[in-house]
Image (cartoon, rainbow, N blue to C red; front, side, top):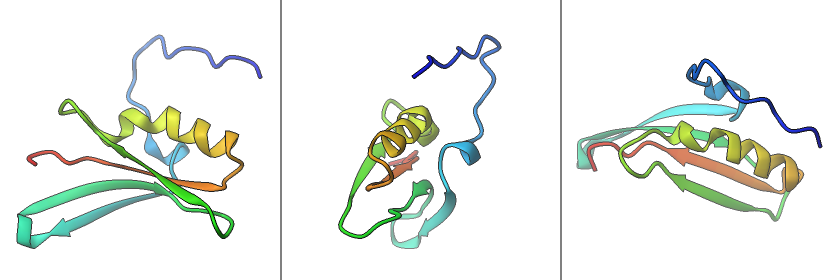
Length: 87
């Protein structure tokens, strides 16, 4: 596979080309409003890989890795990344 070129301008990436869904989940009992990025399974009997943002950044920091895993695993796993700020 040909290596992907770097992003020389360091522009933010849109999650739309890396995840199939972006959801806003309200957890009222915890007073949290959580952003979730998700690509579901395309086939039965697969797993899910969950990415936690870590170090106060965004779930989209895993966008490239999530897309790569989906491609390598041929959509036999779903990927979920979320922002858990203020946790």
